[in-house]
Image (cartoon, rainbow, N blue to C red; front, side, top):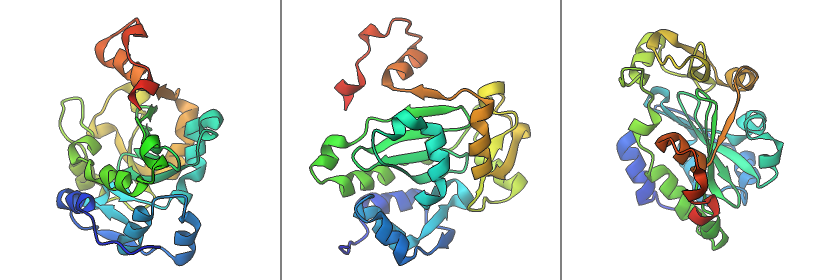
Length: 237
């Protein structure tokens, strides 16, 4: 694998998220397994930083192998067959960032709301060998305010969750009881620290997963009943 210096995109990410506050080194077998499946740039980050935690668990770079079962459950069989997908990062509230071998940043799964959101993807760029650049931009574009969740009064929740429950461990997340998809009550009183793998496995039995594309997002955001005037996803890729 080629050697890289830390790129400007990841430098910018570190300016916002600071250095990892927990790290686990990645062994050679794991690096070899994902060679050719995920961008070399990501494997380089793994070599430099390991699987790691930022800001007490607000954002994580994780081992995709740990999330294979949960990812298959949330994407479903039909979607899973379209590409080879991997969870490359996640948030402290269980948001999963999904990368496809051919499509790049393909899905964002928001379990608290039961959403599987189809992203624009990077298929054309990846087909021309630009997967490393697209991976850099994935990290560069991460913003704390978008990873954070807010309560019903639009007040950020994460730091209050850490103050109440402590920082998150690798297998932990902050979730809502009952789930927001059912209750719509994003109060700190309804937050609990829970095992992320158990929660992601059980939640689909309790809620209806919504598969959201650009057209559906437009309908939700603007209250559009007739979607005929909204662009097709293929026009946006």
